[in-house]
Image: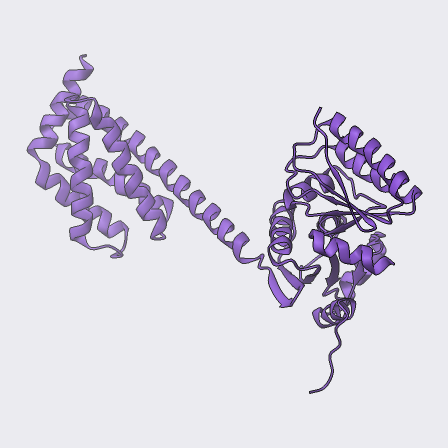
Length: 117
Length: 273
């Protein structure tokens, strides 16, 4: 099973998804991220999905769930770099990713997290 | 009766009287088109069609029928583009019958030949009509495509602020186009604020509102905030009486108000110079 690496940069966890997301990959990421958040006490999570071209309702829901899990550790989640086609798909599926912040790119995502502190 | 022989005799007859028939045919067509094309041009076009008709009648080669259809399609398309009516276009073919009839009217032995020929001309006339309407539909769909492209510009108002002035009715196809263009521009320019101006949208009903909400939702997923501006008093009344909720989406009366809001949110301030 492919694994998505989680990088810790200062108080922020940085997850860059470079592969096609499979359901089990996302579940694994969710577990890893929860472990990492508990261990590091990070205050923010940035999930970069620039390279993700295809999403379905399951993955959309998992992204929301990751946001909810992070909030339990008092960390804010920002999803960055979403492609227009992905945004349109999620909207058509009726998913608005509530509880998760979004930003155009990683830089703007970091600004949001920094502004929070 | 041998159909092939009948057609053959008609072909021979048309070949022998070529100049006379084309001459009369062109006269009839030019009179019908009321001088909007020159006689020489009509003669040239009809001469080509005439040769093909003769070739089809004489059953000489199997390509003739296809070529005749192609020539007629081309002729009808030209007529449709130049703004002639369908009857004027079909008349161009039907007057061939008239021209030939005037010649064979006196000779009783040509009746079966003329009947066979007449049936063929009728088919050709219908063909021109079909080609004409196909060409017209093509023109209409081309125009609606170019109108669609014209009507959805995305403009940059400020560093990080873009605007989409919408003009005309919003349907799902148009919304899709607007959404794609808006999102692409957001990504390309790195803007994080978009203003959707609906001053030019004549009516806002629940469907249009739904489309707007979808567009704003998709932009938010990219991390951009949207403002809807250009809400006219009547539109505001309709929105309220229909019970449409824009939720937490900011709405403003004018594009200027929306720009001011966007500037404020970007932490910018306009001061007198």
